[in-house]
Length: 470
Ligand SMILES: [Zn+2]
Image 1 (cartoon, helix red, strand yellow):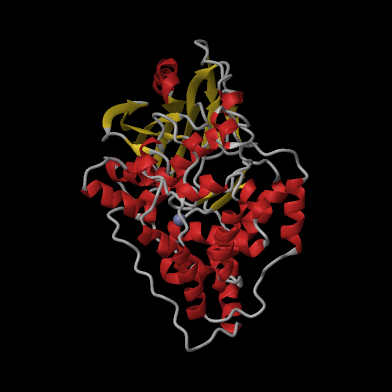
Image 2: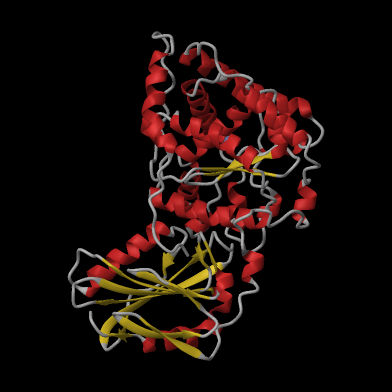
């Protein structure tokens, strides 16, 4: 769980205005009008896209060999955010969290998940003739995300009651979600229904993709060119890609037609020195894994921030406790936990469970300035900010009455698949009002399958809390 909700400021957002200005300066024919796309009916909220996507991303990163090469990742991100900024305003969802990662896989493929996470196979970058072709596939994927095709598909499916929850939404794609990710019992398991979008959605993604390409300064025809490149490749990855994502001839025709409607983009970005450098770097950096090898588990856990291996080594909480004493409370914690203190918030956890992204095991306490003067309203406020910072979590129950330091407190449980560990996480949140009108919170975090080893430690800590000023 993240320790504190942080608003991420992205430079590309600041640059969006500038990009729009540059676009106005592009001599696009005034006679032509790009096709207006109506996103399909969707019964889900934008937050559902984000949450489903984050969960699916955690699962994907647990199973796929994510390429750990900052030079390549930075480059793919720069192209990705250039395209994000070029999404027409009416399809922009500022809440979405776009990310672009490279999978160290040989087959030509790319997929995007609802709400923003995109995965581009190394084989796709190596096969593209230029940056425009690579951007074409990415623009197509991005269009599925922007038009919210994953949740739209689930809306349709629910009408025929094929499945129940939004956890099943996998925003599929060019080439589909790789078989390795469609594990049994995984959130993506049911996503097998979504491996193929309808022809209608694919056409929408092609048309919007072409528009995004032009707005970003690329040649929209390069989207069609990339499909041809893939077809020509035939051998490794080609047939697999085409079986997942049929590319009839009229698909090229439709993209070319849209390019006509958009008008001429003068001096479009085709090949760039950066693309050539990255391609050379990839071609010279050893063999990529094949799909078959990945299905057998090859190359997992390369992602540097991925602490799952370390997390299996987190020692259980000691049954011996030591007392923490500050100027406003005392509390006892297991003596093999450390104190990561701060002014209004503190973390208590075993060392192996903490990194800069958050904690996988332990307790976070703190005080929050809340608007509401009653415990129910204040707790709701706090929980909703917690869910914003940790969108993979869901509240499992209403509040149960308990107490902290003799005061009435509310307890509730949140669960979800942690993007830190890829494991199902359980967070117990206990809240109480302080005399100064602020809310005190106590968040107990552990992977669900280990939670029975933490129950008694958590309740001992909670019972030991004594406030003496507030
Ligand atoms: Zn598609």
